[in-house]
Image (cartoon, rainbow, N blue to C red; front, side, top):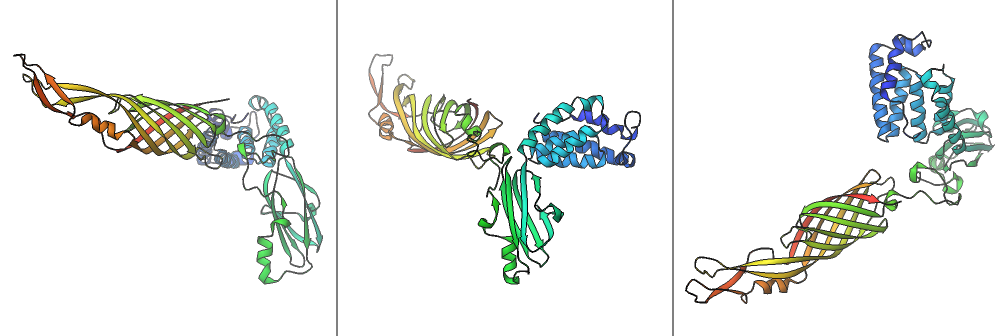
Length: 430
């Protein structure tokens, strides 16, 4: 059911029926007074709401559907609004919208969704929280819950609320105002007790006492944001582990990348394994590069940002190895031919750098790397190109001619180098 919004093409006919309703459904006041411009706006807002819902932007979808419903209170629009409210944790509003949806005159399209509405309502009923605010001392004059005025007769009664953070304000007849803040988990029942003084507090301490009470005077839990999946759940109390992050559920990643300067070459493939979301290793292989085909083994440390997380900066370090054949050109000229000489060297480097990884959906990742390489065996590289390497050739008259020293013409024997790369990976896991 998550994301099962009514598509725009279906609602288009419903919204368009505002001007000709009557055969199957009596026009509502909003339908009879809506202008063509308002209906055009409703169609556009509904399209935007569906697009937002399909992209997972449920808060934006809820806003769009609510604005459409104010113009044209169609059952299909109300159904989508209920889904959006459910998806952002507004269970009380979602249940009310589903209730009104099932109470609307039945059509063939709406009737098919009634079982789904009933199922969603039953699931949300089990996730609702209950809050009871009890007052002693002075008689209460005003009662506010989450910034919304409530009847003081509701004090002492169990109120159905959404899981998450709440703020309670009570003003006594003598002028004492008390505020309590806290969060409740799904399915939890909490009692909030407030003692009102018979007179207003001192003006110097009133602001502090009413707007920032000590935590021991508040209720529930001090939870700043919901857990994985947007759930306000005490996982430990339920003896259940929180849903694992996608960073944990995809420990293996197969990637292909392109770049420059790396010992692994212009194009490479890699396998990454992260037994923990913050720590892992990577084996890379590719080519060609200035040194030929190469390999690297890097150890990574990364830090996925707070949930919901799609970005993780990191650092890595490790050795690189190139199996290369260097070509040396010699200045000796044998019958107009400049001879060459081959030298085989294993180039070993130490790589350090930074990585920046973004998640694209549940499986794919995009990663950029930037770093420095330091050649460990620079002396061996230099020795290959020093004056000890000579070429010999035999000209047409069979006389052996000793050539001059060969020069290194391929590769780079400098000690340091920079590299950068970009790769896309596919995560594998349970």
